[in-house]
Length: 633
Picture 1 (tube, rainbow, N blue to C red):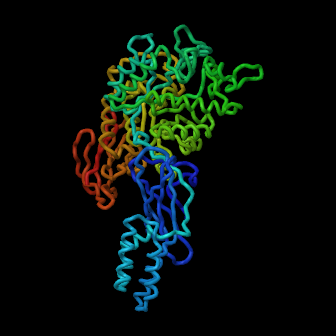
Picture 2 (picture 1 turned 120 degrees about the horizontal axis):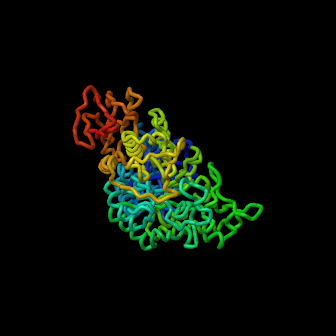
């Protein structure tokens, strides 16, 4: 057995798929000599004992293919079995001799003798074998030995003394939200309406109808846990907090509790559960930030001092980042002698929040913690809760980013936030949608984050905000915005990609309906995504050449091939007129592919026939930098 597909690192890490969708498996399988072989695909959930199986079909050049459909989310394994099909080998030889006119009574008896030894199949196969054997013995006619019905029954029923099974190959069948969703990230304490007053979970609940109206599927919360007092940071990340400064939500832990507690000013655990229930009513889910770091006031520092590193003078070793030390938080020591207990405690934190109704976790900076820990934790959690989703918020180097995806993270933040030119976007999407990346890395295109205000948004021009969210929402099936994006917030720290008034260190109160917002535009994009399955996947993407370096165009097709959408998006503020060639684009089911005959505007419903295999289009970014067009055959 050679060249098995799908595999990630020769089967070291799981392939990712979506439950209910067909999993295609291919392999080159051959043996010495001319005997006929049979091949089967076997699979089961990781914790099950019984295998399910399906035949694999020979195509050409010893290439075999098979498929199955995982019916429940969870972790699976699959393998390939191959063996010599002795009856099929006999039948092949018999038919060859028969065509030469040779005398074959002994050969026929040899085949019939195989029928008497077959007994490993089911009742239906046994009945076929018995009937065909009796017909031959009673009439002497060899025709009953050569029926396809008997061939199939014998393939199931004969012994397989040389059966070979491949190694076990892992894969994960995730629920659809693992691939598709529009995320809205917000800081809970900034959802109130009164300046200077700390927001609560009830304030968050009051905001949900507005977020749902924009069409978002996931509400992502920065940490909701108690915030430490020791070395608390002030506004603008000042080293000393002023009176009333709330501190960073990432300085987790105080006398009120740690990672399994809620900040008292936000409300109670019961209030949080009510917030989750309100999200469900509006068909949204909650994602919770999971940051593996602690304030010096975290209960673990007293309960488990061995989990934290200290300097030679006995003082705590504070967390570091490129901008310097952060004395408001410390990192657990994953190399301590009691690391096993630390791992279990962090796993139990995730399990605790799942019990409260959270099943999505955005993991903060996972690349700064041991990879082996994440592989273990995700596996442990998903064995218990296969619905759990983990997003790696790791804006790190390409190979560590991909390594985190391979070892189990369901989704990954990416470099989209910094890819602005046409050539950059095409190259990067070409990388993400190629093999093997498409089998394990699911990108989530955030346009901004609480930590990142990219330079291209700092002008505050509406067209660039619209262009970036349109790119994110159409290029990737999962994308996200950080609250304030819809209000065109863009005030930076001079010369840096950071918000000047970062709500990581202060409480904000906003008018969510203030003039100039782009909420209706985001609503239209998310409605288009929900109505077009082509936009609910990332891998089936093809760029269309356009002779304008500031217009990018592409076509996406749904997994079931029933929906195709063309997008053309402006990358500059100028008006654009261009020819979009669709002559070599075909749509439809595999057995009925047709050329595109017309396009329908997804937003307005207008239809445009194609002429000479294409269409001339215009984009005025000051109105709308994106065209979304459904393909009609």
